[in-house]
Amino acid sequence: MLADFKYALRILIKAPGFSAIAILTLALGIGANSAIFSVIDTVLLRPLPFPKPDQLAMVWAHTAKEPKEKDVASIPDFVDYQEQSRSFSAMAAYTRAGTILSGAGESQQLEGLAVSSNLFDVLSIQPMLGRAYTRDEDKVGAAPVVLFSYGLWKRAFGNDPHIVGQQVMLSGRSYTVLGVMPPGWRFPVQGAAIEYLTPLVPLVQTAVSNRGSHSFSIVARLKTGVEVHQAEAEMNTIAARLAQQYPDTNTDRLVSVIPLHEDIVGQIRPALIILLSAVALVLLIACANVANLLLARAAVRNREMAIRTALGAGRGRIVRQLLAEGLLLALLGGASGLLVAGWGVDLLRTLGPQDLPRISDIGINTTVCAFTLAISVLSTAAFGLIPALQVSRPDVK
Image (cartoon, rainbow, N blue to C red):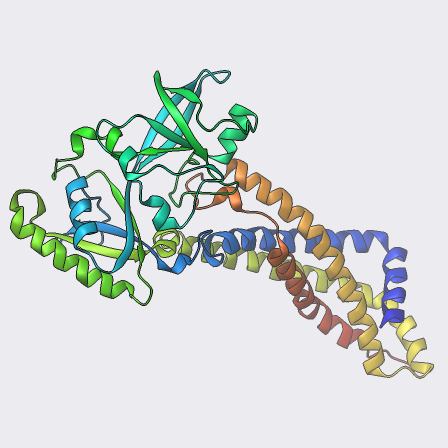
């Protein structure tokens, strides 16, 4: 086989125009597939970056008339869910927030979340520096505190190791920095990257006792051994009880419990599968084009194959040599395709839809490289076998 590859390399070098066109054609097809697979790997296949991610779930409220709608809850409902539910080990409420950071260079508009203190128990994650805020800091009248993302800490504060305990100005109000989240940490919500976390209750004081203020999402962690359908049944029992107690605000309100990963990717999965199917068709077209190039080039090599046959080379030996040439083409096309995929992924992160889940995590990794190698080998069979079988039948008369 080593001799086959050495000879194949010499043959390709002797036909640079043909080799360049074939490799470029394969690079475009393989690169497109690798780029889209990198998206699917990150969004659909890779588990969420939290301990035991299969236990995480979203708790959505909805009305009986609109069972497929994802509605949010009120703070009083959330408190009742926490106190009465036995299916979850922890439950947290959150809502989007925004602020302006000043006093650290130029003023910056930040996207963040106001989150209840038990979020850190739900996600089983703690700050890299400092500490998480407690329930005492998540109540009306508590002093304002904040946690920063690793990216914001690096960008705005130059990785200052003494940031914990400092005072920062957010929208003209002084906050105490409690800590910095780990690098690579992402809160599992769509949209702009979350750059800070702050306690929920002090920010939404007017909604704390308003059961009709449905403005808060709920994420929870299932207890070990509890299935989603069991948790959902229990939550609807609680919802029915609350509807009897508070008919003005809770009548006909039901609850859906959806695994967090499914909640994030459920709507986008069909589009990604269709997109992968489309680029797979592009690869098939590329393989067909390369097969046609090989067939056209076969006429030039009839004399060579006749001489090899006359010298005693069997058909299987010739097919193996030609498949080695095809595999070398495919591997070179695959290597070039990784470069194309890298450019495509960079372009996607820059210009792609920012509501694509985990878009900043998309990249070329070992899984994508293995996928590229696999489709390179399969491409050899797709474009190399028929030309090899035809060329291996030389006319030796």
